Length: 191
Image 1 (cartoon, rainbow, N blue to C red):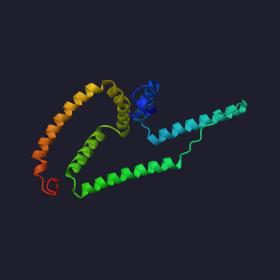
Image 2 (tube, rainbow, N blue to C red):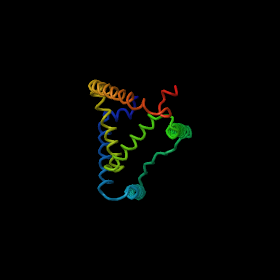
Image 3 (spheres, helix red, strand yellow):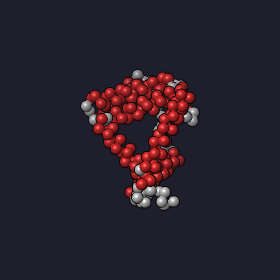
Image 4 (cartoon, one colour):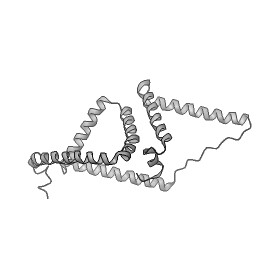
């Protein structure tokens, strides 16, 4: 996991923070899914309440002649913004290169994987809203690393067996389906 605070949270070494993330995600999901209000309305209302509370706190402290705790300055360094922009640019260029290969028919296997993934997302989207999907992703990302860290030997053994089975099935499909495709789809004829 690379160590640090994020790894401690994901591995539940800081239980109160990890539990807090699960609770906040659950409350947020329940609020979005069951309130019937749009995300923008809820976000605006929450920010409105926070701004009003901070304003009242500052004025109440001024009336009592007590010093106000200063808020930290939130400033992004130019190096941080440049590194994020460079990383984002590289990811977009990679996605555009993959899209280029797919549209020109250069990589049929990649095309097939993209079609299957988009179809699965479409099916999943018909059953789940975006916020439910994000909630499930948040819960999985906060629980799976800790469970894997605890039971990694068992997980590796079972996933190794599953991977071998998928490999056998893929080999059969590759030999029976992909090898029969016309030359423009098969990479073997280009090599």
